[in-house]
Amino acid sequence: MQRIIEDYLPFGEYRTYYRIVGEINNNKKPLVLLHGGPGSTHNYFEIFDCLAEDGRAIVMYDQIGCGNSSIPDKPELWTARTWLDELIAIRDHLQLTNIHLLGQSWGGMLAIQYMCDENPKGIASIILASTLPSSSMWEREGRRLIRLMPEEEQNALIEAEKTGNYEDPHYLEAIDSYMSRYCFDLSSITLPECFTRKKNFGTQSYETAWGPSEYKPTGTLKDFEYRDKLHSINVPTLITSGIGDESTPLINKLMFDSIPNARWELFAHSQHMSFLQEEEKYIKIIRDWLNEND
Image 1 (cartoon, rainbow, N blue to C red):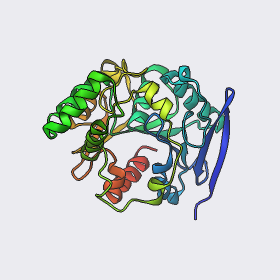
Image 2: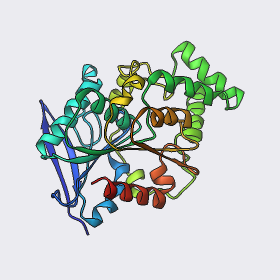
Image 3: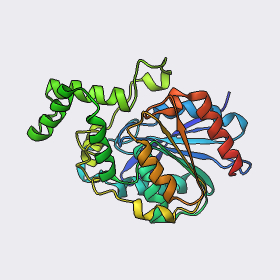
């Protein structure tokens, strides 16, 4: 049984919850995990606890605005800058000098911006899991996926955009269908406890930073555009995605083509959470990747 430490980091006037599995040491570089959302919490990352079995610390945290971290009623906080500063603070506080970095969905966006804008030292490798380098490209691909849905669901999504009524029952049914098709089909596998556990989802942080619609960014991240900066990522990069993912193969092919020294694993039986839908294969690939790039 690996040692698990749960504690809080002071972050300005707030605090950030973190969880460390295993011991931080110099033998194997820790893996730091950036969850999705914004606002989705670390919970599902507990699937990676097993990676600590061979002596590597696994570090995860709830980004401010969700989970066990502070959730202030301050919409002005919910920008990439806040979460970048928090990542920097986590590394400083825990003395994470040399690490691997995995970001899933929004967490991958955060990892891309961190690498491109902050030019951080001590990054052995990054893993970009079902993520995106461009909000505009995400929306275009989302609208293409919508055209594959039944006409009545397409109409409900379009109507909500026109009226701004994202509480309409027809819209809610249609967006649930979209999520089941392209994000995660909850009936596809037996879900682990860490996924089903009740959590404090960051509704304000999500809607302020992203918006009310999964496929159409309208918040502070709507102008996230890093396609032309991907070439500056100069560390080994593993890209993972599912064939039925809302992070479509086109999006991931662009990242693969643009990032030097990149490898892309496309999971044939997955949507947006390959590490749950093809867990055994995913864990093996990540474990081997980390060992190869220590």
